[in-house]
Amino acid sequence: MRKTIAIVGYGPGISSAVAQKFGQNGFSIALIGRTPDKLQAGVTALQAQGIEAAAFPGDASSAESIRATIARVSAEFGPIHVIEWTAYATGAGDLVSAESAAVRAVLETPIVALLAAVQEALPDLRASKGAVLITGGAFGDLGPEMDARAVEFNSMGLALANAAKHKLAGLLNARLKADGVYAGEVVVAGTIKGSAWDKGNANLDGSKVADAFWQLYQERNVSSVRVGP
Image (cartoon, rainbow, N blue to C red):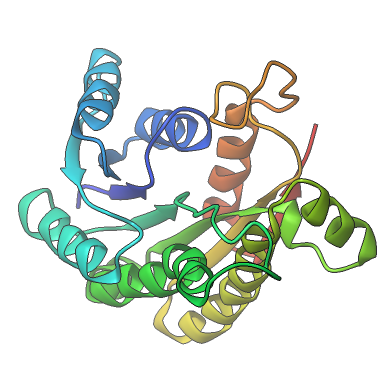
């Protein structure tokens, strides 16, 4: 059976590197994101490398949108063997002044919509003994030092979401084992070159994160690893 990976939140950096890594290892690539032009550019670049790829516009900030998009991938492109979730939200930078709607929104993408995607793809994942791969971030680390950095960079909402996503990765890992489905997270402790966060001082190649995801997928023995410079 052909293996398909659905990459949610496609853009430059990690998700682009993951698409190349899995594509070079025989996977067909379904790119999911909000910007059709960006998706199509990614498809064109992958196809130029001989990798089968297709674009599926969908909004990872909406559980309903992403559930419908995952269903389209499965129906139109083939059963999903792996979900790789890179999508995130950056609102509610100052939790003290953030409105309730902003706090809910920052958790919708990495928790509610991610779960909707997993639930929709679960029959495919169970049938293929597949995997859920999640991109996390060091802002979610517990402890006063990282808390202070999240406050300094006005990224408290992102920190909260990353912490919740880390817990979700572990819970999914434990819950889905009985179904033969693996769930794991790569915690990124650095800035990815070429990403939206790169202001000229990025210190981490997306390929290093992609390599970590590939190792997690193959070995399936831990729920979380950390990648830094």
